[in-house]
Length: 498
Ligand SMILES: Cc1cc2nc3c(=O)[nH]c(=O)nc-3n(C[C@H](O)[C@H](O)[C@H](O)COP(=O)(O)OP(=O)(O)OC[C@H]3O[C@@H](n4cnc5c(N)ncnc54)[C@H](O)[C@@H]3O)c2cc1C
Image (tube, rainbow, N blue to C red; front, side, top):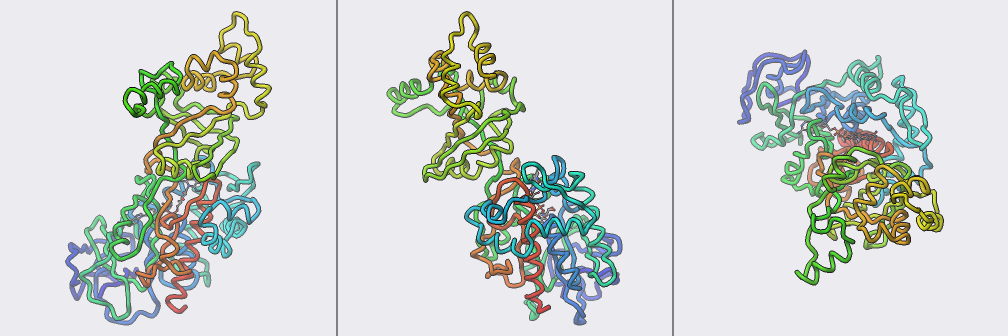
């Protein structure tokens, strides 16, 4: 029978594993841990249960912390050479740990999952997270938007302090967590003998070959499917589905979008009249190539739209309106304001094939004022210099008017003023999930009990972004990941009767 590796055991298996997942290496996988013992039969009953946590993001690390503090032998496995890679990336632009808004508003960020995520946050909410960071020697502050950051904005010092505490807990504060890097979980070892103790037989790909081991319980905290190069690639989906666990399809969340392009034929024409022309001719509107014109993409990709507002209402009447910033990309738009609307926009595109948002280029100006300024006689001045001097519109704001409006609208003060306040921007596709900040979809709460244990997989617990919830940026992702890691860790303790 296979067991989790221990730091003290070593040598070749006395009883070779019955698993066909050889070769099993005897070379140490991590200092002090002998891979051979991973697959070795150790008949003696263990004095304490051993738990495998798979995935070393914030959710897995938090689950490991709960278990370690309870005195449980915990082994953390990760496919990557080091843990917390996405956590570190999140720190690049300032690690937004959580948010300081009132609890009710905070919970509402989880939308349809506010109830399930809210239940987890009751055990570890925004203030608890800040206190936890303080316990690691990391002070936090509330930014002007209510977002909470470490005072130095960085993720690395926090992760370093956290890993140190997990590896070297103070006397009486838990057992050290054993880390096993470059261990890619491959699923279950179906060749293992049925285990009367109900243990989980797992397979891992390691640099030394494929190994098999058993654990008394398992926490899976494998992340979503964005930024696969940092470790979370969604490869776990078919593994859980094969075991009877339903998984809602993973989809990009907090993502960018491609805009509907203008075909060469429609460039410079009023889009509506052109569409009608083609509809009459062909019976259907032509599908333009997605993306900006080459001129716009070359000059403005990467440039920000500052102090603008986005308004969007979907077919069900759900609406979004907010001020903020976003950037133009080579083929569309992305950035914090777009991310905030992204769930509605994504769902609308999935249902309807496109989503049209309205961009207010001057949210501080009333429509009346914009109209009055647009109508102001401009003499011999160009439209661009007129709009710049009367309304302060220039650069990318001027460019998008030229990009999306035909000559007719640009030369009609009423149409132009209406467009400045509500420019229709048609989005036709989400950017690929790998580019997204996070993923929606995953293991639904309905398939698990309150401990985050799927009904189909007793002894296995799920945590983090791999659960079926989503939230905007603002620290909501990290908070829910950590809270769910705690719930899963406590769930394991309950399962093991500790
Ligand atoms: C650019 C960027 C910035 C972000 N900024 C913020 C922010 O400021 N605030 C915020 O709240 N959120 C932010 N996020 C989101 C946040 O980082 C994630 O939601 C969070 O890291 C998810 O935690 P997790 O533990 O569920 O998964 P992950 O952090 O993705 O960790 C999953 C781990 O599982 C491992 N793994 C996956 N498959 C296997 C396998 N088969 N075998 C072994 N190991 C495996 C991976 O290697 C990885 O280490 C940001 C994300 C991005 C991409």
